[in-house]
Length: 258
Length: 300
Image 1 (tube, rainbow over the protein chains, first blue to last red):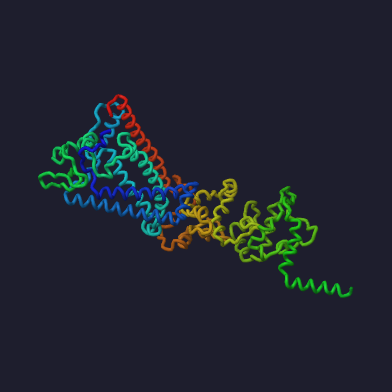
Image 2 (image 1 turned 45 degrees about the vertical axis):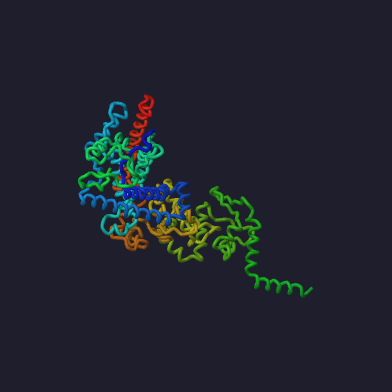
């Protein structure tokens, strides 16, 4: 298991992105903790949790407070992506394309032992991209349906009120989908996968070993080598912005910083 | 000797004047000397049994406990043996007893007589509630307490949650659907976690009325199409004009009733297991490949 040994590393996430992730953990967990007992209000455990929080009004207050936090965070995220685009930096590498869907099939074939070679992935593999877009989709649905339930009187000035009970059903369904996806998909890929157990440190240190990058994000590795952003021998200092290419290209972006 | 009866009479008068309450209590004591005994039942001609045991504690704690005596509501039974009960069935007995309530609660009785329950009661339908069905007899509690408010859906639900009873009158059982609605969730949680606070969410009587409940098809009903928005605005004063369509009428969503809600439900019922299955499959494949490689010695 020398994957996690102190080899040279590359930056994967900026500090701002890691802070974003931290707030996402915080809001997601508190929203789930205060939301699930509202969905399953007729169970004993829901009653105990709501009692613990001092009743349904307080539970809703906490839920809505962290919902506002999540919405603000999402707006910040959209702003950051747009700002990066405007500045000409390609921030994401999160765009979904035909190759991602092809990679799913190729990877499944590889995992099932039908193919010898693992498909090579870019900066983010299809698992990470799907999860990212699941968060985008989920947050959009949850925020919209949540606001509908929060301000039904206002909504019904503009659109039919039947959206309120529909929003309530969607809010509950989407919540279960998100929680289930995180427990299975995210926990497996970022925690329980045997070679990274107990957790993938990349999101917290912001860095990944070059060796691991070469295995798991081969295309990104090749790209960084080609642009000269990656010097395999260099032992990167933990938090300092690593060596940049000679040309003043869009290097502040996490995409091209090594 | 001649002065003794006079003394007795004046002492009695004195006691009555000063201790009228105690005298009433004394009178109740007389009744309770028999009626406090457990398991007393009266068998009616219908062979139904009417329990006539009174728990003095429960009566004392009831809203009438400190203001009424046994004889207030049972004036014919002040002598023993009591006159024969005229009612043939338990139902007849209860309907007849409601007349006694009317002596004090005449305004409510008048209101009730015009309601769907009151009219059906006069028509003789056997399941229709009379006073004691909802308020109890010797255990009447203050209807304005949070406990009574929070328990109202269960109270109405004893009939309106029972498909067997509802079917007789061409009605749908609505209790379950109410409990699952937004209002019902809040009310249930108040009942469970804050029994001493009245639920702020609408309960049965907030929308349907109390003793003046009308048939929902009656244009005068508070929930009739022409009145429902006004009724909503009692709690939602800023509700827009399309607000009332948020109401799913205590119906379980289906292709006909609230199709949008139903199809959203169906969408998630399909989406969740599909996504779940796909993610589990990928994770199991990944784990399998890892284990396989390890066995072959390809990995550390």
